[in-house]
Image (cartoon, rainbow, N blue to C red; front, side, top):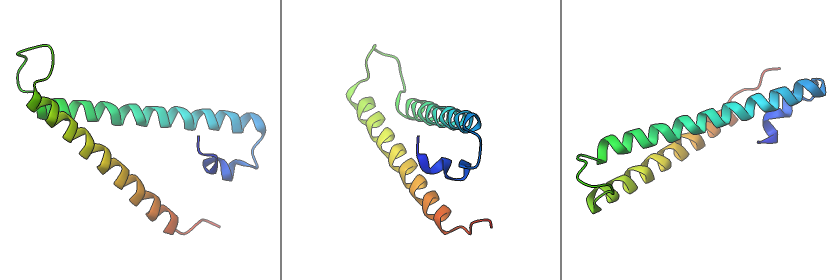
Length: 93
């Protein structure tokens, strides 16, 4: 977990810090799983048309790879943009 997330929690008792850290970890895991599931669903729906065989044919495989690559690049770009905007946001006093 990113320790900078706990920067404002220094004034909390140690037990509360641990609970908050665990909660943040769980939220990060949940968000990662949500992103993964969204990726799988979107790329499967867009790329797999028929169930002729157990494995993907060459066209489906290429489509899934391209779809996953675009999805991950988009997610990274959104994350970076969000971080940029977050850094420029005024901090509460």
